[in-house]
Length: 112
Image (cartoon, rainbow, N blue to C red):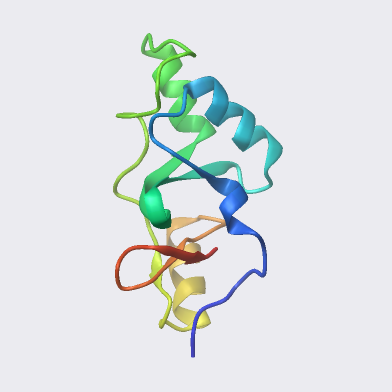
């Protein structure tokens, strides 16, 4: 059974790592998950960025017009698309996260 927690257009939560902090803040502000998924071409996930990551970067002197490269989390939690919904829930509860990327074998985002 494949994991499919939400039936949403997950692509609207994605951003490239060359996006500016300002662009990323706007995307996060417009979505309901409080984060953005950093992807490269083909929706291969590189990491996640939250408003907290951005806040810390700005406190540490980053400019709002700089890219998000280097400030997003590359050590993010995810599930493989073949894992159970139960396993996805366990990870979400253990790490106190509300949304979890679902990836295929190649690391490509398939759901959220």
